[in-house]
Length: 311
Image (tube, rainbow, N blue to C red; front, side, top):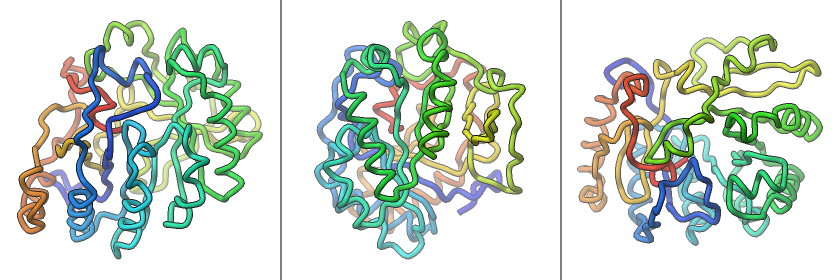
């Protein structure tokens, strides 16, 4: 459906848990408590049904870590069987990926985004608080062998992992996996960690050849080529925001509709999840009123952490 700014809103990100097996400092608020009262499978089915009615073409399931939800396979299978939903995706840290890989593929998953912010063991531990780098890399290769389309998402942080750009480009090139570099965003109450670590990703890659976007392309990445003609992505929501072509809404695991990642004006939809017609009405109304842009430049920053919103 179209919003008031004539953008075609046809992509939803649904967080199915805020639980995670990592503790990434830029993702979680200090002293954050995980909410184990995530939406039930039946409530998620209602959301998926209404999105299908609204002719949403794409749903990506996120967390926290979505593979910690024991209904993940059933959820993906249900979404993949809807007539208008043509593309289901998953964002994961890949720690548990090998345990679910065959089942994920069997229910129709074709593409997967993997969050990986360092290829160095010590840095990986510093960022995540865990020693899973070997497991993650091994599971990336297993998923690649099984035919999944993989994108590796790297949140670029000044003085933390910005010296690994060449390593990530080589990793992507040698393994035929697209790497996307993402700007560190101020979200939640972790400004103490974020301060001094933000970097303009677009500025960082000036001088690289850029591939022109296709007309009306909804992809938020800009695509660059390195000296070996390897194509990688750059996502710059702050220095070069793409609000004018934003086509997505988000559903949090506690039943909130979020029309903009960076706005705390969430709409509580829990009371509508037992009535598809009421949910359809409220989604039509609220999506039409989706804001035209974020206001990070005015220091209007979301108080909810990314882990509470959904990646």
